[in-house]
Length: 171
Image (tube, rainbow, N blue to C red):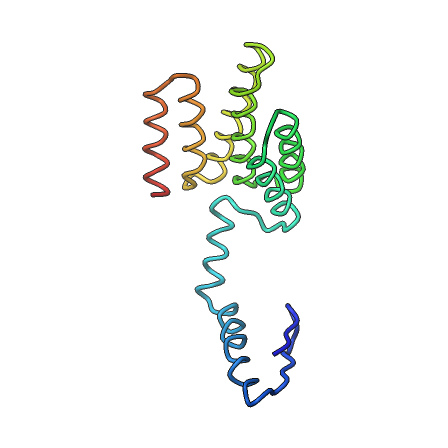
């Protein structure tokens, strides 16, 4: 079976009567895309911190990849540049604010150039995490990020409170 993503019809080549059997899962997948539950789940994902802008989502994915591979402050700054571009495209993209808070938190905790630099990054990370929470109050990741920021500030009571909120929302 040969298929083209997004094609209107599948092109099937019969090989020993296998074409019909192989085409059925494709038809089933196409029907599922139009099922109200699938559409509703997609909308729920968007309202829980996501975006409808595919370019912004791609920028977030690129930033996350850089963050995972980060070996120094330069890579984190590149990640922040990608996240700022995603947020410029969709200023209501809560997941991007969570990722930005994470990158700023790591930059301030692991690579500060001075105590003032650490404080500045902490404040920016907290602001980004709080913005994520304001945009998507049911998104646990924003509260988890606040917990990490509090922990790095040695505010263990605040960290436990925020982590409790995160786990209540996203067990």
